[in-house]
Length: 401
Image 1: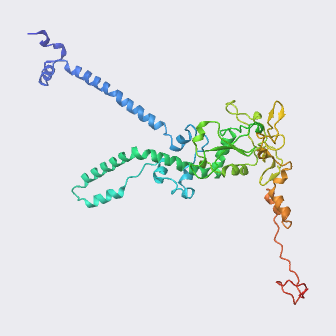
Image 2 (image 1 turned 90 degrees about the horizontal axis):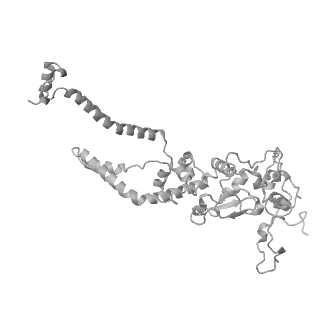
């Protein structure tokens, strides 16, 4: 008899050995089975731990929204992040349904809303089927809906994405003209996110993104300089693919009227740029003194084209000699940089008062932004007429001349 099959009395009593033999186990196999089961459990443990880790990572990190990811793309630094409350207001989206293809799907993509299934088709199919085959038909209809969705997504996803970008741009044109949007753009303006005017005589005045048209597809975004009142092409080519209609023609003038306290006469060298000094905050452009500034047409008089006029116009020279204006290649567009010596010539209120003397001084001051005391309207004056005269008659004193 082989020694391996010899009974080892150290493994237990006769009853335990007999019980193991009845269960088909050899003496001592019970302990080995526990070790094997423990090793099997240890092998299955790593996938469970990895699943918990992945669940924690997804729960701890919030997914990025479509709006924030769109504004963080390269070349979209000019855009402001529109709040969802503004987009969910139907009044702010008036008239955009006819301008954007697949409007509903594009709006759902912007708001990160999952597309809804066509429940009406499923209900019609369920009514036609009997009670016995309800479950099978529901499964087939769901499979058909999923198959249709998967077949539609690869072909329509690019169209929906382009429509979502177009819809967001048109909403952005309206958002930056609102109170919340223009405040957000002012913060980006103070930080210099829009760049600076490339003209030398403007001394690094900060520019504003504007559009030359409100219709999409006509022009790209341009930079408006409030110092020389001119528009320029952005220096970086990544901005030349952004549609100018996403900013519109109203934003530039409305921004200067909303924030007339900005001092545009400061030189760019005196301003702290965040790119050169990231640890320091840039100098604000608004004036801190309490003096009341002169207003012309609702704007600060010092901000009316401070980079134009005499002394701020470029004169081309060759070896120190000025180029004659009569020359064929001489300067022809100098009038674009011209500015009246007396800035009051641009005051439309005073010009209107000069043409209409009956216009009161109080109304003129109110147009310039000054506070005036309202007076009650005077009763109309009554003019005496002769008894035999007619108000429509051209005769004097009721008698013919």
